[in-house]
Image (cartoon, rainbow, N blue to C red; front, side, top):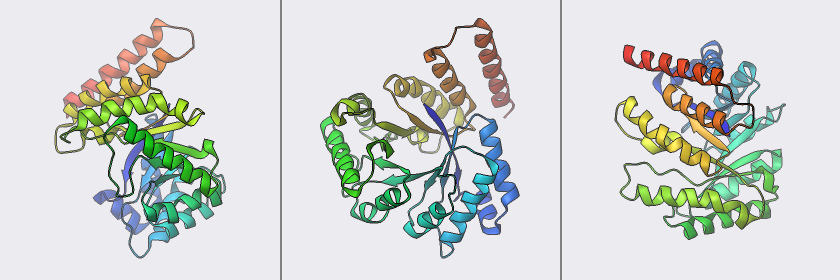
Length: 280
């Protein structure tokens, strides 16, 4: 499972200032810190860019490319800005995030993945941008996404499906997330190949509450996602307990030789994380 940092929300005040000033040193340092914390890919969520959209997204891409050789995920709504960024992606490391059955995204964003030969994340949202509730409804949207992607010229292996984690604050969150697990399990059989999947862990705990509460919920949710074969997880890398849990789960599932020394090292990392939380 690919661990993706979703910390670069460029609408955050500090990041927005760095973007406005084109402070490559500060933004690059942030990205290097995320990689040092264990990020295996970086999600760049631009939010609604203004009149300088193309210039700003290209700046973000070039800064990130200089800071790391990891895959870069562009989470943007402006097709012209995405095109500009893809045009500068000499190493072909960009993943587009993303499209759905919404007509505008089908018409303007999906074709960019085909033109530039990159992967793209498809959300299980219907034409009205609504999240279907039941398993069959979700699978129906997944099939429609797959068919639209193939019709546009995308290769099956370039499609990444995001079943959409429901925030626990939603009234029907439990039903949504139970269905999500079944979707992850059934997608390969339905589509006939080992389709890649993605999810945002931060979605689960959206809302105003203490980090320690969010991390407890995230730590419970991570093993469920891994058990159902998720291939890409977007995570707030500052949630160190959640990141530690991901490492433990992946290590247990690893086919390497078991070692109690590794257990002790993981325990030491967890204790250090707990001390840093206590200091706050």
